[in-house]
Image (cartoon, rainbow, N blue to C red; front, side):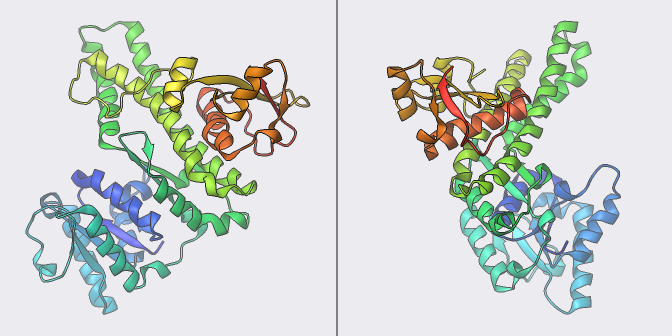
Length: 388
């Protein structure tokens, strides 16, 4: 795939993942090793094939990359490509103070050490001016990155922007797959996940070892993997489904709440492991709410409303139903407070807020994480809603 090859040290991976997401969200195709290389691939072959097929090589300059033999080889290959093509290929990005390689020492660079946003704007403008936006990518190679803040908050602006770039193809019948959804984990999430894995590796020698605790740790890891897979699959289903019902303008709002639900569940479990281990330095930025959707008190706090009301959304013909919390102060909650025994057509209450803050995110979270038996529905014309 032609595009932008990001040459960097693995020690700078956290910053580079965020930059790669920002580039993709602005319409630029990116080749990144952690996105492209799979188990069993030849690292050497895949990396240098990526350089050979990429239009430009973005070289992240730092003390880490300048001491990396891999980055030195990648720069050498990129310089050779420049000589062969007779044009500029290497675009330097300064991400930390360091002495640049002699081969590119006189080149202008985007300086991320003085401010990320300003440097990103400079880089985007340069890429547009040299025609990088004109690079065509097959739809199945397109990516939808999801940038998170504090582990749970989606950058809705960039997510909606990227989704709308993919919208023409989706409207013409293309579909996103889970493999095209790329959540960008925060450092704290990566650290908490690594703590779980290291605890599992050494738990047999832990002074508190017991088969019951070992079972709990292994079960937690399985839940984490299921949640991560479910997040990608759920966002892909959301992207495809919301286009079918022509409500694409609400993609980022629904994605935000789906991610909030799932990441809260994962962080709550990882935080429980942290507390068990006694690690004090890796606490999450936002305290997760354990089992947030299991009681009205925790659900209201999590969904940021004063009070919630449990409802069933159901289809009499098929017998399918979806249980969700809704805002007690919203239209549905007020109506059922007056007449809780009656069920009404979803069409009477299907406001964007009800559907894309409450019903759709909880439906997808339930299906892809809590219970696969929960149906996934996009046409609610024959469905009703009533008190649970």
